Length: 169
Image (cartoon, rainbow, N blue to C red):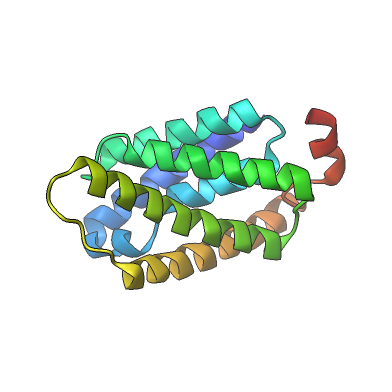
């Protein structure tokens, strides 16, 4: 069920990415739907290896649709998915506040990892754009929380329950 839910989320993220790229190309600077997907799956999934694979897959899809350094988003989303899944398993995170905090941390983490990789691997200097990173973090977190509340209304369930996580780890 997790794979099907992830596949549906990935299709939705690609549709949002393609639509925003066509309608308003500058808006993708302030929004990252793939981080929302990976953070949600990391908090919901019970398998660390599955979260790593899903983060890498989402990052590769994002890399194929964007003009960023090939593999940078895949690496960043894999690391952030792993970190969220690990922390979520150890501290028993659940609810909107925990999801928002993890989503904000993941968005900033992805931006920092991609910037670091780009700065190291490309000879031209890359500007340190903290104002754009913060704007992207706020917009992505707010949209992710809105999406979470919509999913709760439709599905009628929390992100993850403690019993699910303890059995699988």
